[in-house]
Image 1: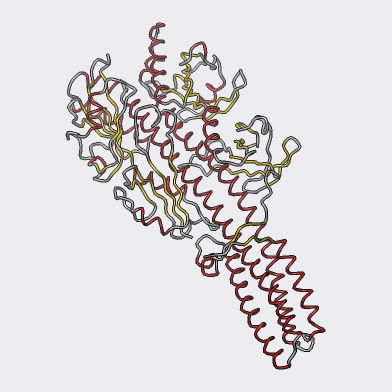
Image 2: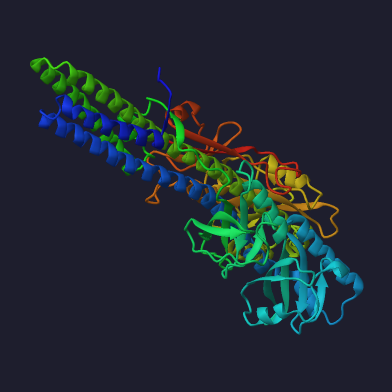
Length: 634
C-alpha cells in the first residue's frame, strides 16, 4: 500500500540548504580526510540542486500547459463547431436559390397578394425544418424587396447593399456579417437566383440565428468551467463579435492578440490570461477568418505547488507512460540514478568509519543520509505531482473532446433530418408522383434533381425517391446504385409512406443496408405528399455516408501529443445504447459490439453524451442515445 506524502518545491529548497550545512559540518569530523567521499557528496548535492531547478521549470511549464489546454480547447471548440455549422449554410443557400416556387414567383408578370402569402408560407416551411434561420428575404435584381418570411417584422429592407454584393459574384454564395438597424448582429448567406436563361433575376438572403447559436455553444462549453472564464469570437481584425460575458468582454471591443500564444491582457483593470485559436476549417471552408478566444482572471486561482503524490509513480510507470513528456522521463531516470549513488556513498562511508573506528563520522553521515532520503522523497513527490498534473490535464481535455464528439455528431445528423423533409417538398417530386407512375423521362428528371442535390450535399452516398408502393423511382447516381425498380423495406420506409405531416421524418436503425452496399449506416426518410397534401404519394430516402463521415468526426476530437499525432494506442468510438460500434478510429468494425472489458486497459477513458441539438433528439420524438468514448493508455 502506497504512502501518501505532501511535497513542494519550497520543501525541496529547504532540504537542499540543510544538506549543504550538514556536508559543511562534516568536514571537521572526518569528511575532510576523505576527499573522495566528500567529492561524491558534493556531486550528489549538485545533482539534487540541478534537479530542483529543472523540476521548478517543469512545474511552471506544466501549469502553463494546463492553462493553455483549458483555454485553448474551449477557444478551438467554440470556433470550429460554429464553422462546421456555417459550412452547411453554404449548401442551403445554393439549393434554395434554385427553388422552383421562388423562381416562378420572380418570373411572373403579375403576382397577387395571395401568391406572395403562399410563397411566404413556403419560406415558413423551410425555417420550420432548418431552425437555425430566423428570416429569409427574396429580392428582385433591381434591389426591390419581393418577399420576406417575417413580413413587417423583418429586418430586411429595399435597396439593401447585399443585392449588389451578390450580383457581383453571380452563381456563388456570399457570406456577410454586419449589424442590422437595431444594432443586433446579422450573419447572412446570400446568392443570386437564376432565371430560365441562368441570368440572375433576383437575390436570396438567409438570416442565420447568430446570437442564438453562440449562446448555445458558449453555455455548453462553460459547463464545469472555472468561475470567471469568458469565451468569445473575434473577426480577422480582432473585433469581438460574440461574447459569453458582454460585461467583461464587450461586443465591438478589440482583442489584438497573437494566435496560439498564452498572453496576459487587461480587462477592467484586471489581468486575464487569454488565448486565441483560429479555425481549423471544415472541408476547405474557413468562413470569414474568425477565431475563438478564451480568457480567465490571472489570479483566479493560484495553483498551489503542493500536491499529493504516491509511490505508485516509480521510474517504470513514468518511463512506460504514453502521455508523459520526454523531459519528465529524463528527470525521473536521473532521480533514480542519484538514489543509487546516495546508497553507495552511505555504504562506503560506513566502511571507512568502521575501519578507522571513527564514531563521529557515522552520525554525520547518518544525518546526511536522512536528509538525502528526504530530498529524494521530495524529488519523487514533485515528479508524482507532475505525473498527476499531466494525467489530470489530459483527462479534462479528453472529457471536453468526448462531449464535443457527440455534439458534432448530433449537429450533423440534425441537418440530415432537415434535408430529407425539405427535399420531400420539391414540387416536381410531388406533382409527378401524384400523377401516377413516372415515365422514363420523368424518372430521369427526378434523378437529375437528386444528382444536383447530391452534388451540393456531399455527406450522402446516394439519394433516392420511391413511390407509394415503396419502389425506387430514381437515384442520384444515374441508376448506378442498382436499386431503381427495387422495393424498399423497413420501419423507416413504412413510416414515410404512412406520413401526413411535412415536419415528420423517420430514420432507420444503424444497420447494414443494400442502399449502402451492405454496410451499416443511417437512412433518413421524408414523406412526399400530393400537392393538396391529402395523401402520401412516395418518399425520399437519403443515405448518410457514415463510414468516412463518422470516422473523420472521431479523428477531429481524438487528443494529440506535442507532435500533433494521437497518443500511441489511443482510440475514439461512437457507441449506441445497445453497445454497438457506430464508428471507431481503430480496428473495431462498425456494427460490432464494444467489449467494455477492453476499456480497463486504458488509464484515461472519457465518455460524452449529448442531449441533442435544438429540437433534434430533444422534442421531435426521435431517440437514439449515442456515447462518444475516448480511451488513452497511461
